[in-house]
Image (cartoon, rainbow, N blue to C red; front, side, top):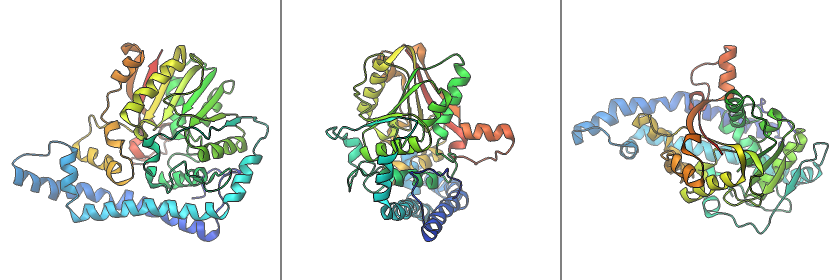
Length: 385
């Protein structure tokens, strides 16, 4: 629990608050390592044989697996505990944030130091329904709710909770996704030197800052539709000595000029949006990119190639973690929205790419199987204009 990098904006927990957060993290680790594996045993020894005997065939798709597994008592227990751990996580973090919400808001206002980044908010920006209709990941109030002037609470809760949610496995700065894209781009495009970079759906900037470090001469921008997470992102970046320009915008339609970026990225944004929004975002990427520029979107791996049990387990979030677009987003072939946006088919790449954190651990010999969610692989959707 103490492995998360401390910075001026990170909410400070009292002894009891920290103990509670540590319990939730330990609870999640226990579920992942000790309880969840029992689901496969149940599937192979009980659910699958019973289905085959009753129907004289095997499962056709993950939906049939889900319906059968949801009738099993062990799976019901695991699922209930999994959802409970998620709700406990937000509650445990919210307690410490609520206690110091005014101080955090004041601290964000004061974070205008040497890096001299910027923050531009638009109070008239309409929130897309796919963002506002549910509390994403079960975070109470979502990312956009404001309860006080200059509110940053949603961002502070998110920053701390993500570290607990990933059980520390996304790095001390929760920045593995950004680092993973940087790792792939630097390996595949060693001569690529972006002068202007845009991170779409940046929330608190976890994945934005690696681009500042990778290309220190570049002008880096981050956009999101939610003001509280952007205020927090600005304060966090300034306190960590990174220059980023944050603005409140919808990735479907930004106010940046045509062909004004060399690199446009996102990190697990697509599964939070509708199919129509996804097409608009890819189209906007094409508009914003200069000739020769790159877009790179990181996601959780698609279902294609997975066995039906693994598909079902990954699909749990669609039905139980306020992720209504999760399942559909993992079935999409991105070639069509890419070509419709104007990218040439031969310039579009859909591939698995290593987690930067796991890649480093493998190279140093400290990696153990199961050490990172997704077995050390992300899905990467690349397009070159």
